[in-house]
Amino acid sequence: MTLPQENPARPISEDDRDSAVQRVQEAYAEGHISHEDMDGRLQQVLSARTHRELAPALASLPEEDAGTSSTIGALGGRIKRSGAWKVPRTLKVESAFGSVRLDLSRAVFEHSTVDIELQVGTGRAKITVPRDAIVDVEGLHTGWKDLRYKTPRHSGTGGQRIRISGTVGFGRLKIRHARR
Image (cartoon, rainbow, N blue to C red):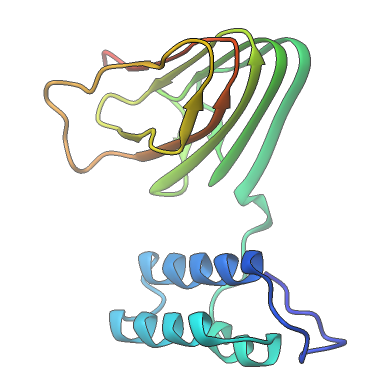
């Protein structure tokens, strides 16, 4: 989040606040600040009303990485990612008419938590996650067909956390864990 230089007295939006909270939490998760420092900064962020009040909470934190979000979109056709591809912190996938296939089993993760936001109109979507991944589908809404996902019998606690949200209209989403 870049603070505007021209008017620091401008009120902050909910998006600004959410982005600031995420930035503080990521700084803690990456070891840049202590737990006590994170608590204090979060209190400042949640009570701030203007950008001037928000600035001290974000001071000395690492800048946001511009490559943490990516969007893949297609009106029709197929969206496919497989092999050793780099997964951003937030991946937005938009497909109106077509299929989506994301194979994360050999993907390169730079973040411990990855958010995948799906906007699928008509068509199938299949996501293959690493064997030890922890999958959260609480923010996902399906229209015509239900989600097909079975949690693994031997789920671990140390795997990649993948949060899948968004909407799947008239298609089916299948999520499975890689066998190896």
